[in-house]
Image (cartoon, rainbow over all chains, first blue to last red; front, side):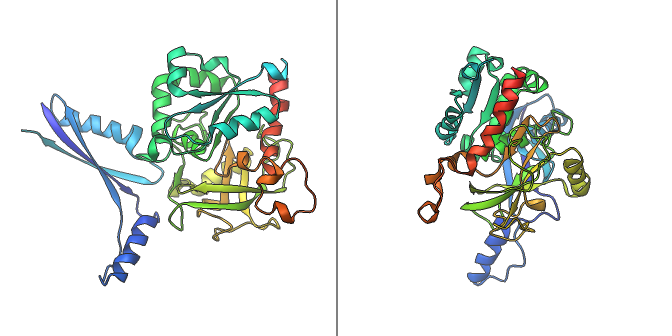
Length: 83
Length: 272
């Protein structure tokens, strides 16, 4: 089966997000009443797997081994079957 | 072993851009450093032919995902066993700027477990945000554990440049104090950002150019053989590389950056 796995990596709560803060300042200057901005990255991974559970386990491994640094990053995983 | 028999590998990949000046710094010590692409080492399986491994500065693999992580994971996937042996043999490893990021992402620094499976620290995006290229002051904190800086007296203030956008050293929030304590206990804290009088930056920009926790600029592992730092000693090797050289009255041959490489000589001559 083919799956599309979305791995979203974002900063853990309490960590300063310099890119988000800079973006928020600029959006304010452009006239938007923005309270805060946080930046996250989404990796769309196409993967072949037996089932969605196995696809999720593989995605967890990818996040831990490469995509997220546990010191500062959280990650979430969404698995969708590809038709 | 004679000094001219020592083999230093300056490892590069696409995006590395400080390999030539780093190799030149070793040549000043009388050591022939060889610049080798990771693919060459993978093909020849000869990492263990070298006595010293150096990860120079640059933007390896375009800094994609996180600075240094692709270099680190690829190295581990291709040469993990050799790298482990290299580390266990206490052969010196130096990481400068992007090289420091590689060592942190590889789990070699701080390396509380010698070779951690996952990174125990991070070099996050600078605060204030953006690329920062400036000359800064560093205070030497090591009591002698770090083999690279043994010739530098503790407390000495050095003048070197930084050039990076991801250099904010962080520990996991919940372990910050515990890990910092270990750095001090095991003499792993090597350099902190300070002003020219040696007063710590206390997080204040631009003395601390990136917002690093505890003004940390460079650390080593508990064995003292693996050393990483954000500043570029290889760009402060000669007196004429300093921004204020025309105003300096004494024109000695070398600038402060040379000191970062000198200490290695004693270790190499003793070990090999």
